[in-house]
Every structure is written in structure tokens, then in C-alpha cells.
Image 1 (cartoon, rainbow, N blue to C red):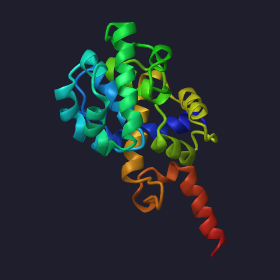
Image 2 (cartoon, rainbow, N blue to C red):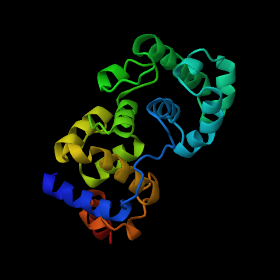
Image 3 (cartoon, rainbow, N blue to C red):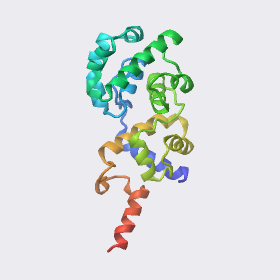
Image 4 (cartoon, rainbow, N blue to C red):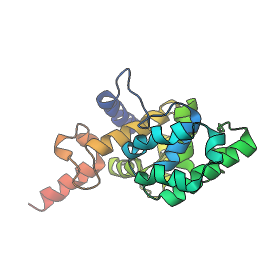
Length: 221
């Protein structure tokens, strides 16, 4: 896809989903430590589920040091509704211990440092950097971003790292955070995994998936 075509799609989505006071993060965090822990917990679950355990988790463990010394069974009980709670509890406690021991409880500001923490991959690191510090070092590729990037024609790849590279080549760095938000928003509301709502989609005329589906239907009639 050409950069101009990608830009037109971006501007159309921006007009639909971005208002002056729009919060670009779906997680309800208050500081870098919270967004780090909540993003680790968000794996294989919804942001709503993670937000629902926020108060219970951080009222008991408000900072890095308290979570680093937490009883894992107590943590598991608090985060149980987020799924995979055994692994997640281990990750967030271990990440807190590493932050305490190696960084003085300061959440790092680079991807290379963040991905050394347990439970943190490129997607999590990109989310933390963007929302905690306003740093656009990359684009977080989750299931929605992956699906829409393929459907819209931004990429022909299925590997998240390659998709991220393709997206970064299409959009200027200053909007990388917005791209993640816009694709997730459209994916949740319109371009769903099963039965995408193409009939009501406002960008369907620019969408490669819609164009291909329309051709198939025409050829079969």
C-alpha cells in the first residue's frame, strides 16, 4: 500500500474516533508502574476485566516494593478474573522485584530495557512507553491491529513484528500511538473478527478486504 492511501484511511478513522478530549488508553492507570502491571495482566483478556481488578490490586500493593514482596496466592486471588492468573501473578511479582533491584522501582523508558522484565514483550513495552511517557518507539500490535492491518492492506504479513515494521513505514512516528488506538477502536466496534459490519463501515471504499469480498460476491452472481 502507498503511504498516501494509508494516510487517507488514518484521517478517516481519526475523524470517526478521535475527539479533542479522547483518552488514547483503554486501561485506567495513574502512573507508569500501574500501566506496566495492567498491560501485563491484559494478555488474553479484555481491558474491562483488567480495570475491574485495579482498585483491589493497587490498594493492597500500591507500588513496586509492596508488590515485589507480595504473597503470590493473595495476588492470584485478586487477579483471578483476568485469566491465566498463575502465570500473570508470577510475572507481575517478578517484574516488580526486577524493577526494585535493578531500577530503583523506576519503570524504564526504552524497549530494550522493558522487554527484559518478566511478562513483557514488544507489544506491552510499546504500550507502556506511549501511554506512560509519550514515547513512540514502536506500534503495539494486538489481535485487532493485526487483523485490521491485513484487511485494510497495510501489510501482507501475519507476524506481529513484521506488521509493526510495515506500519512504521506507512505512518509518521508522531501518530504511532494514535494508529494503535484507532485500529483497536474500529476493530472492536465495526471490523470484528467474525462477521465484520462492512455495511455500516465508513471506510469500506478504502478497504482491500471489502473490495475483494465485493468482487467475489459479484463473480458468484
